[in-house]
Amino acid sequence: MPLPDSNAWLKYLGLAAQLLVMIGLAVYAGLWLDKKLGVAPLFIILLPLLVLGATFYQLYKETVKKKQ
Image 1 (cartoon, one colour):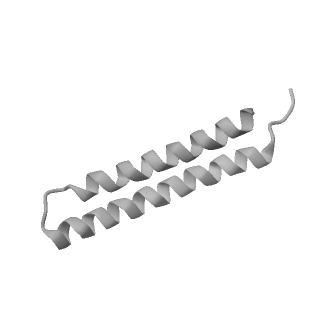
Image 2: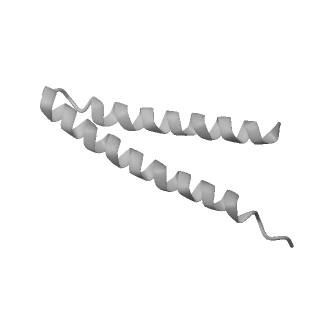
């Protein structure tokens, strides 16, 4: 059984770490904006969802590009 390409494995591990950091920053920014603007928990919900959407779109583009 051949070993998987370690560079690809490390690349996706880095993507997971990047996702966790970006979600953490989005939650922190959402808390700060909600407190600053005095609104209901709008940005704490919206910002992490935008980060997830952008990350999944980036992942989709990378995987489609590799298939071609």
